[in-house]
Amino acid sequence: MYRILAFSLLAVALLAGCASAPVPAPVVNGTTPLAEMPVSAPVVDVAPVPVLPPVAVPVRPAPRPVAAYDEREGLRLLDRLLPARVRDREGWRTDIFGAFRALKLPYTAEQFCAAMAVIEQESTWQSDPVVPGLPRIVWGKIEDKADSLHLPMPLVRAALHKSSPDGRSYTERIDSLRTEKEMNALYEDLSAEARNIGLPMSMKNPIRTGGPMQVSVEFAEGHASVWPYPYARRGSWRQEVFSRRGGLYFGIANLLQYPAPYSRMIYRFADYNAGRFSSRNAAFQNAVSRLSGRALVADGDLLTYVEGEARPGSSTHQALRTLAGRLGMTDEAILRDLKLEKHSSFGNTVLYQRLYALADRSAGTTVSREALPQIDLKSPKITRRLTTEWFARRVDGRYATCLARQ
Image (tube, rainbow, N blue to C red; front, side, top):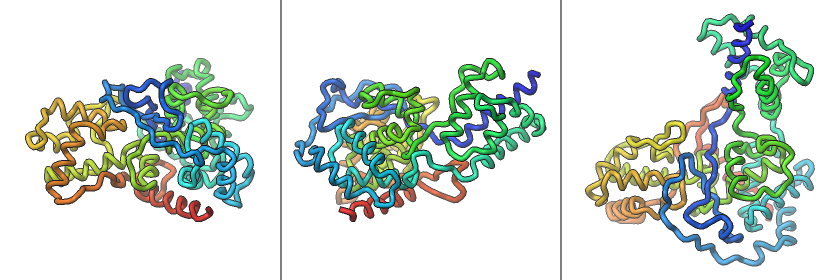
């Protein structure tokens, strides 16, 4: 009996193979209390590590153009930009505009098209996008793990013949999986029956992203803690992410509701894939590499993290140590500033300013402050080599097509 229950635990744990990497929960940047943040320039930062004492940086919003916040004109613009082929255009229009209104984002072609380009890339305008070959992916991972543990697959499959709340066995539900939403529901049922089938109550749902923009559940939970959700919640934040309105709201927040210091939208698209400020940080790594003579992978991560905690000794940190004398900074000061890498305030640190002053003098020109992160994308759903740069350029092409519809 206990052996079969153990097999159930194994199969459920292996569903995590189809999950995407989490996006860290947001925190409000700087020292401005949320209640005092200007409605015309919302700032919601994300940080994968506990919030450190921030560098005080006053939030100074740009002048608010009246036309960019006129709801009637905004709706007209959105109507012109929405692709004609989209099914249920009215529903998509309502949910997109509702997100922009609630997040206090300007109604501009650039902002609307940025959101729509990501929607099209991530789901091709499907509120619950289909994942091709999902049953094969799940069973393949189960078989790989069973082989590694020398467990016979017939026994593993037998453990999953237990009837589930919808009347079908778990095996039948795995075999008919089409979307991540269905997979999420499957796991939720397994989790709810933990006491009956021997699952530990502390196990987390491995489905980490969902909805038409493939936004992180963890991001949604964190964002909802610092910014009011505009809808009556119909269940958990996880369930809201898998709804169209919730998936769009949190996805648009993740893409647009933070102060990105970029000249082109393509760098926001890269950030959406790799994590906020990754394009800024990748350029910083390039500058460190040129000055130190050390080869660095410009992936946008300046430190290494273990269970969300920043650790010293990354390749970028080691390269900066060789520049400590030229920077006029101690290792403690360098590490202090590096720990702000996931915040907008990193650009105002002594480390950032002095590093670029050296880089500009060395190059005899202004060194770029933005670069596409060099990251290979890994997922059981990906069958060919894809990168963050590929994602950003693909979305940027859709963005240009959308702008042409003005």
